[in-house]
Image (cartoon, rainbow over all chains, first blue to last red; front, side):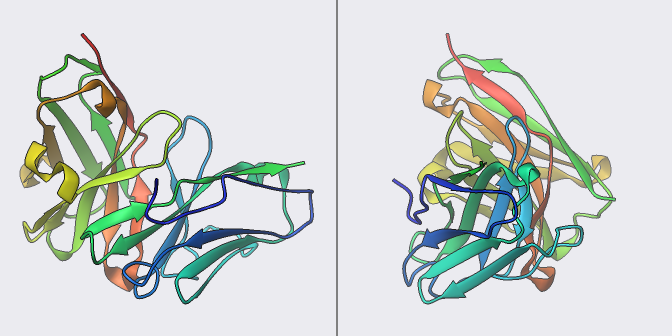
Length: 110
Length: 121
């Protein structure tokens, strides 16, 4: 199982706000920046949040990130059908000296 | 505009060594603030980080795979080459290279399209 954990699925209707969580420990999320990636089937992951809550240029402001203690969250506001994808969190783990990815959350827009 | 593209065999046999090339453009792999990463993703599973090759020649490897991995850069060709020895069917995955930057701690900001590698006899 992954060192950082995510719920396997999440869902929402268009226009809703959805939050995806990423739970870790003091050796990773507790002291390191969290990153979030969006991935559509058959394509490469795309960075949507870096440094816990920063958006790369071109990422809509509907996407936001936060961190508290050893947990982090990705929130998508004003959900749209094109947001349906897999989402992964990633963080450096000081104990493992390794980048670790969450198991991924499949977001379904109902 | 930064782009990266992976190339290499699509099929390797168990125990063989895999060699993949990442050809990049739009940035210079020099200095300690930029790197090229390799990340793989088995079908239906989460990504797994493999290596980071910094522009100052510092290299980092995922500890569980370190003994099987080697990465080098060819600055003149704007390429980073990954070798992975003793391939096994569990190594079947899509292998991605990505631009990594410590500037503003942006991390793995640009990814290649990936190349699928199957390990089978």
